[in-house]
Length: 275
Image (tube, rainbow, N blue to C red; front, side):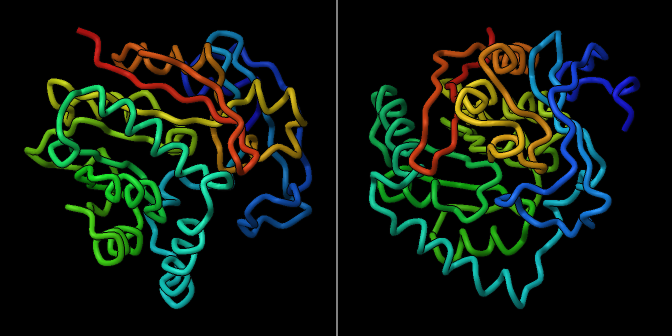
């Protein structure tokens, strides 16, 4: 896509600055089968909302809706899940995440078994498993049928939906909806986050985690930092996170940046719907 016809994924502004042109696959990036001779993407920053955008045409919008090869992914998901769950606290992003979310939810003043969580884009299901073990009622959504089946069979969540939040239908309301490293994989994150409002209880909040581009660039380059890998269409900072929340109809209760045990730089917030 030509930079002079590109509009920001987050706010739509054409006022974009090229940060880097990347012509080789970083060593740690997932191999999506792009021929080395064709690998080329632009990392740009919007001068309006300040989000970073990965501009390329290699990953289709429905990439995560397709089921992985059952003979490989189906056998590996439980093994990978057990491996990550087995990490000690000092090496686990998920255990730290679960602790801060649990501390927030305990502020509701309710027994944990009465507090319901919907994890969107649950993947391996490590986070809902941690929250379930703490006593919370957990549900999840994932576009991959294998992930949803795994959540039900191996984790024992209360319910798992195959698909996306766009097509999700339920009369249930949730006290927390979590987006853990999910929205950066979407070219249009605002309407997706806005949809969460429909499923929140009257006391409900949204928890959002995103790659922190500003912090990552203080400790590396666009090429070598995982935060800027090809599957992240958007990479955030405090300004762009505030824009995301505002446009989706939320107020941020707090915004914090952390350096996780996995070496990822993460920005996170709890949000409440605007009244």
